Image 1: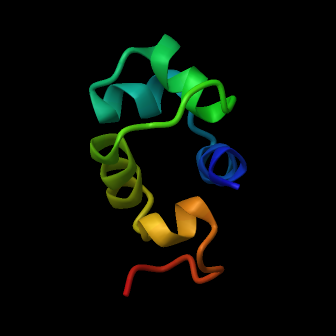
Image 2: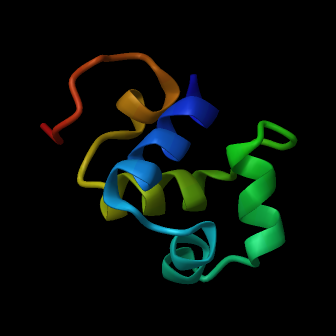
Image 3: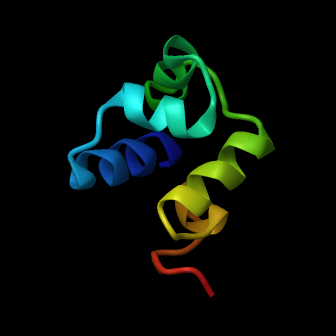
Length: 70
C-alpha cells in the first residue's frame, strides 16, 4: 500500500521522482527504491512525505483512507 500511495500522491501533483527526492533531501536513486517497494523508507522519510503531501503517515501506510491530516 505504501508504495502505491506515495507514487499516486506524487503523480497526482505532476511531480517527478527527482523533485520529491530533492524535497526530502534524499538521493533520487534511493527514493525510487521506496516507490518501487525495493526497500522501506525510514521514519524520517515517512514523516517528510506526510508533511510534503499534507497527509498522515497512517494514510501513507494504508491504516486509514482519510487523506487529510488530523
